[in-house]
Amino acid sequence: MQTLFANVRIIDGSGSAARDGEVLVTGNRIEAVSERPGGLRAAADAAVIDGGGATLMPGLVEAHAHPSFANTANLEALGDIPPEEHTLLTMKHVRLLLDHGFTSISSAASAKPRLDVVIRNAINAGEIPGPRMLAASPELTVTSGLGDVNRLHMRRDTFAVVANGADEFRAVARMFVREGVDTLKINPSGDEFVPYARARHTVMTEAEIAAVCEVARSREKRVAAHARSAESVKLALRHGAEIIFHATLADAEALDMLEAAKDRIFVAPTVGITYATYKEAAQNGITLPDDVRRALEVELESACDNMKALQRRGVRVLPGGDYGFAWNPIGRNARDLEHFVNLFGFSPMEAIVAATRMGGELMMRGGELGRVAPGFLADLLLVDGDPCADIRILQDANRLLVIMKDGRVHKSAVAAGRTARPLAAE
Ligand SMILES: [Zn+2]
Image 1 (tube, rainbow, N blue to C red):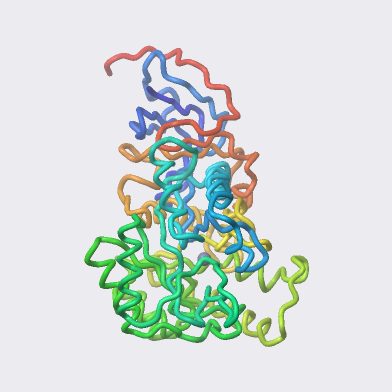
Image 2: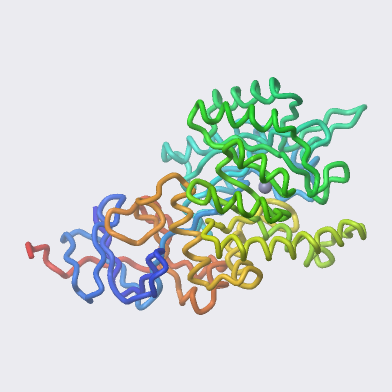
């Protein structure tokens, strides 16, 4: 089956300027791209989508997704959801992400041990609609680390599994390998909203980090590290973590180490959540304690400096903003691209490249995902307007006229015609 996108303006994900042209999809791959109107020939039964000058671009990749986070106001409420309801909710969220143009997501933690895995498997089997997905473990954390909300008199769940010591971390890492995750998530640093584990604190020991990384390496899995403190970034890098989340408080040495590892690592600062927590706290009904507000101000400023520096040094910095909390809900994930432009000084095209071509590399499908080019997988968006003129239009699902994943139309607001062009040998 073929689909011909005619009369479109192509942003191909490489960073080259947009150009007019047409794109032919055969099966689940892009077969040909032409800059000449009428330059491509399609089969007689091909669906023809006349873009009317709209923008055709690669589907977006979310680098820090939490499809099983339930937009709750706190971590305990997330843990309180029973598994059955939670599975349905996660199913709803992956569809929501696809509806908003995210054709791929790399999960940054599952809220219950197997939620990511079962949802990824159901998407891959064609049972439910959703993006391509890399499934993560819950957040492996220490007692008193981010995600440990237990009380002395009461066991509470959240998105974390608590372990202590290298042996326990090795055991839980092996368990999640058995359960089928793609990514092992660890929490070596804290976070400003955790009174006993702040962002500047490095709470896992080197031996614990090393143990998880060793399991991942031996099983061809990846480690993604919640690393805000400078020391946590360094420890994660030293032991081979490939996905560094946040890196907001990275110091000069950590930046040098990130640059030295730039060909194998990805950084996702998750500025969406920091921005919403700090800049929009009042309008979201959040009252921040004074010391937390001051710390977030410093962290946001440091994040902006660090991401500008990392981009200059050629490190892959990707949008993905920890959407999944009450004040930063799932669905508006494309807002991160706007933050990259406004806060980090990316051009709109640079933000798009980070969310498409680099996203394809993050999905471990570099060279076949994240670009509009022959041979690439047909994950495509037809966008009403020019996202390089206004990056915010990507946040409006109504402006996404066509969403195609793996060559199949997930959504189309454009009636497809039939080709009038005969298939003939050139
Ligand atoms: Zn997260």
